[in-house]
Structures are given as structure tokens and as C-alpha cells.
Image 1: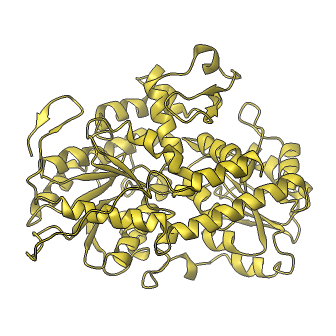
Image 2 (image 1 turned 180 degrees about the vertical axis):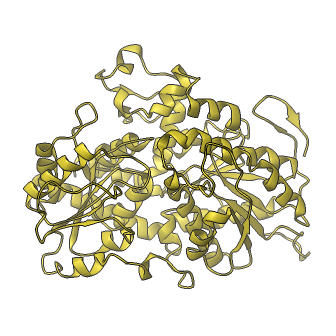
Image 3 (image 1 turned 90 degrees about the vertical axis):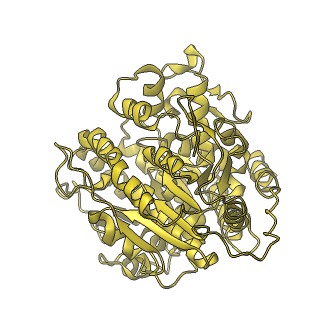
Length: 517
């Protein structure tokens, strides 16, 4: 057994999450206190952050039917949320604040006309504090818990004042989130911090976590070296230490690929002793048993699946290409991608966001560009698809590996380079493009697509075996008795057995002041 495969086996061994005992059932027959069966969920207004919490709400409604679930949204996001939720989940609208120059009606990051408006959008979301506080105060009793996004830091302080425990959702894996926190706490050696510097071990992480300066998200560098950066300023001013003071952290991942980093992640939540990382994913699989909510299984306006059906006679030969909904890809880079894909000789289905760009060559019958909605999970699960050229956003990583499809990692923004390091070097289920000064040439695209898609080649065989193994582990995790199913059960049970109806203990807030709640 080679080293990467042995590491995967080691990661899957029973450890941190599986050993956590379930809390005992209440010993009395008293009626549950008001609010003990109510969970409030508040996603950040970005598709990549919202979808996992919609799946979480669906999974809760499926496996914990006695709970009452409320999901908070805004007017422009209501229809999207409703289409991905069962009818049993109640939706409550909060008015989205007006903050020029943000255009009216822009209430999600994917709707921003320019990425330059992102800091303004973040500041607008912070103004949701008052309507959120009004919502909590309108409830007859404090809910069991608030599940809210990392970027909605104000929810922690408001919830504490109302006697409600907050479980934070970040959207990142344990690996990437813990690595970011470790880098902020202890910067890498100066020689390694420069572009092109030597790989270095991240202090506070397991010994095998070795990265380069290029892997570190710009947001992390800015927090430690450029605190006046607009996003860094928002994180410092608006989020403070609300993250580390959370009662728990919800992670859209599972033990086989992420358990080794849970303890490192938990160590940073020092304001709230005993904080746990609850690995309950892949959340889209955990929610898959619910057939009452409308989802992408019924939504294929571009005919992607019928196009793939025509190529089912050659399983695993189609390359699926998508760079998500947030990152910008230049026209020059799109041209190189198009030429490289055509030259690779493999059929490809490519989701392109730009409405104006056109390919420089005829793609032929085996090249398909889609500019509208793509049912990505169904595409990845299709037998004609053999690999995924991806920006390695964590949701896409989960969807690809859960379908048993290896990844050609092409990270662009945020923590995606860390995700690529995780998938390629640790999990061993992908290969990575070589970007020179942030640009990938057509020859590199052609070469790496061929390496990924060659099922008979040494690398192709290896990454397929890894991806197939992760697929098996992912499905096992969310099944009866699986690690993620147990984590979800234990999370709910621990919240319920320790619920005090708002009479919570004093806690140390991030600013060092004791706040009685």
C-alpha cells in the first residue's frame, strides 16, 4: 500500500469524532421547555455559503422531525431558498439594508455587478443586526440554537444577549480553516513567506501539513500584514472574536478526509472551552433522502444531461469544467482554456459565466459550452463524466469526490489553494495545474487534462482509485450509523440536554468583557 493510500486509511480510522459519547437522554418525563425544539438558521448571502445550510436544514428536517426549523433570508433570496427546502422549514424575511453604492436588489454576492463592491456588500450585511435582534426578541422563548455563517459575526453578540447559543458555519473544511487560523496565530518563516519560497510546515497542524506561500489565501496575508485592506478591516471590526467564542463550529465535511484536523481547529476556540467541530457532511448527501423539496434533479434547462446521455457509450471520457460563481476568469484565460480543451482530444462540458465571450475556434460536436444553470451534482454523477476541472471551492470538491470523480485543481481565490493542496497532496484524488503568474497556458491545460482523463495511465489510475474510495467513505458517513449521521445526532442531543431556556452561563466575549446572559 503506497503512502497516500495508507494516509487515507489512517484518516478513516475511528478517532476524534467517533469517540465522542452521545449525551444521555433526559431522565424525567417533563415537557420540553419552550424553544427547546426550535433551531434558527441564518446563511450568508452567497450561493456557496447558502446552499450547504439549506442542505443542513433539509437534513435536520429529515432526521430530527420533532425540531421546528426557521431559516432567515432576505427578499431577493427567498425564492432560491424556498426552492431548495422542504415545506416544513419556515422562511422569515429580513429587509436587506440599503447602502450606496450597492445597487438596490443586489442581495447576494453572485449578483454583484463588480467584485469591487464586495466590501460594501459585507458592510451592508452587518446592518442586518437590528432586524435580526428584533426577530429574536419576537420569539416566545430562546431557540435551541442559532446556526449562522462566519461572516454574520453580529449574530453571535445578539444571540448571546438573548440567551441563545451560536453554532458557527464557515463553509471551509477543517483542514483549510484550521490552517488559516494557524497561519494567523503563527506566521511562517520569513524566507518561506516570499513567493517562490521553500515549502514549510504549518505550526499547530499535523506534521504532514506542508504548504507554500502561494497556498496562503490573500485574506490571511492581509490580516497579518495589511490590516487596512477593506475585507481585513471588516473581519477585524465586525467579526472580532465572535468566531472563536462560538459554542460550536459546523463543518461540511466528514471524518475520512478531515477528522485529522478537527482537534487543531477546536484548539482555536479558546473563548468557549469545550467547543467542538461537528463534521456532518457532505451536507448535500445528508439531505438527499428528502424528496419533498424541489432541487436540481428536476432542473436542467440547458439539456446538459441529455448531451451527456449521448456519450454514455464511452463511460468516463467527458471532462466537466466549471470555476464556480464568484471568481472572475479573464477572456484571455478563457481562450487558453478553450484551445487546451480542444487540443486534449477529450469531449468536454464547460460552464462559462461570461455572457459575451466566444471561443476562438470551433469546438466541434464534442465541445459544449453552457452559460445558464448546470445541475452540477447530476453532471458529476453521470457515467459519461470522468473528471472535473475545478476551482476547488469546497462545495465543488465535496460534490466531485462524493461522485467518485477526480479533480484537476485550478484554484483561484480565497482558500481554494489550500483545498487544492488537501485534495491533491493529502487525499490524492487529483492533479494540479501549473499557473505561472496566475495564468495557465493552453499547453498546460492540454497536458493536465490528458493526465487526469487517461484512465490507463499511472496517475489516472491512482486518482480514480482515491476518488472512488472517498466516494465510498462519503456515502458511508451520512448513512445510518455513519460518522456524520452520528455527529448530527450528537449535536442535536447535546444542545437539547444542555438547553436552559435562555439562562446561560456568563461567557468571556472576544473583547475580554464578561457578559451576563
